[in-house]
Structure formats: structure tokens, C-alpha cells
Amino acid sequence: MKLSIRKGDIVEVLSGDDKGRQGKVIEVDAKKGRVKIEGINMVKRHERASGARNPGGIIDKPAFMDRSNVMFVCPRCSRPTRVRWERRGEKRIRVCKSCGGEAGS
Ligand SMILES: [Zn+2]
Image 1 (cartoon, rainbow, N blue to C red):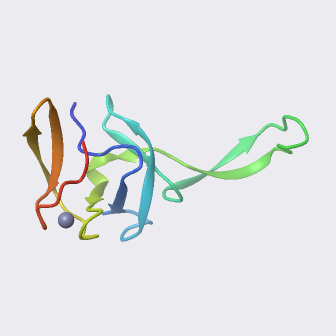
Image 2 (tube, rainbow, N blue to C red):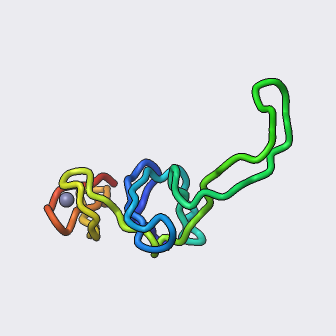
């Protein structure tokens, strides 16, 4: 599965409790088509204490969500948008459908 979303991208949430919020992608699961977004879709996890720096307890962590629930936000025009792929020599790069700006490979 070819995902048009990469780690480090900004995406906007399209559905659920965090609808309309934007966040940075911190993990991508290309096989399952899921992404993990900083501060979005938080779930409570029970963590075991592991030394002085991690006292354990209940902490909030972002959980994976389906790629179809988020939309790529163009770094050029800051709009949630679709991207198309264009070939540049050896590379394929993403191009914003709104402004036509290059959005990285
Ligand atoms: Zn754009």
C-alpha cells in the first residue's frame, strides 16, 4: 500500500473526537494504512514504573488511526489537500492539488 503520508507531515483529522484538529505524524504503518499523530487520538495506558525517570502510572499516548480519517496538510499553503505524485528523475514527489507546490517525496 502506497501511503501519501510520511512521518513528520502535518495532517488534519476528518472524523471522531479530534475532528478538525491538526497534528504532526509521528509514526506510519504503511502495511495497515494507519498513522499515529502527536496529541491526537490519545488513549490512556498503564505504564509500569521503570526507574527514577519513569515513575509509571496512567499516561496518555497517541494511538494509531486509519489513514482515511486524516488529510494531508500542505506545508506551502497550509490547506488540507489531496496530493498527486509526480516523477522528478529517479524520485517521485508529492505535489499539492490546491497550490501545485511540492510537498516532499
Ligand atoms: Zn498547497
